Length: 293
Image (cartoon, rainbow, N blue to C red; front, side, top):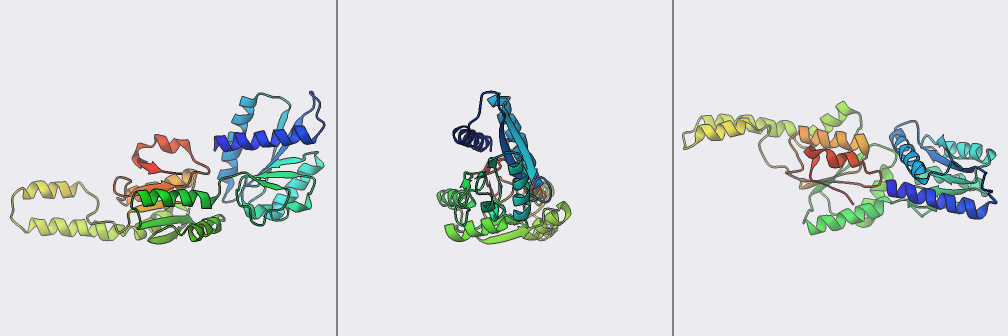
């Protein structure tokens, strides 16, 4: 994420300096159009935080980043871009999603440096500089082949970018057992993961297994029963991996729900995308090992 942000700022500054007559004392205005409200606002907030850190490292007081909210909507993306244009901005970083680029060719004098790497259907004034879903799923496919993982479940949130993930799955032909769509709302998410992992069935299996053993007579019976009582479920899991197509706190929520249902990364492989990767995941030992492109 930080590397991508630095790259985008470098491209924006380069275009600004070469395409405009900017004197040493003049401000270099760069627009930033990202979702700051709605279901994808967490992405925009993450980007702004990373942009500020990158600008501090550049340490050039002439550089002025002007953020605007696209609301993940192509009409709003055009609206705020026109506002930036009236303010003298000719270089804009964003939008995040390819769909938001739909009407940006109305501003032919403005160059947009998009976070998406989707090339098909882009207006001519939009430079794609991101990491697309296809390249990430392709990398995950290679990882799965090396690890002999073929019974994975791909977890996709009911969010605007799900179409890009679906397209990546179809184009890469990644082997998987099932695609599962979930709600990000915590209560619904937990219930859905419970159903997916057959949590209640495995929990009942544990109770029945303990009862069965209690009716038998064999060596180390008490020890085996005590070990079972330390567990939360009993029985195999019918998939070998999960690909969690989500980010930041939403990604953590999915992983936490999996842990709650006794499906840890010690039992199956946790795999996730890397476009907005949150380094705090590396510090959360309960999720390790977790793999990403």
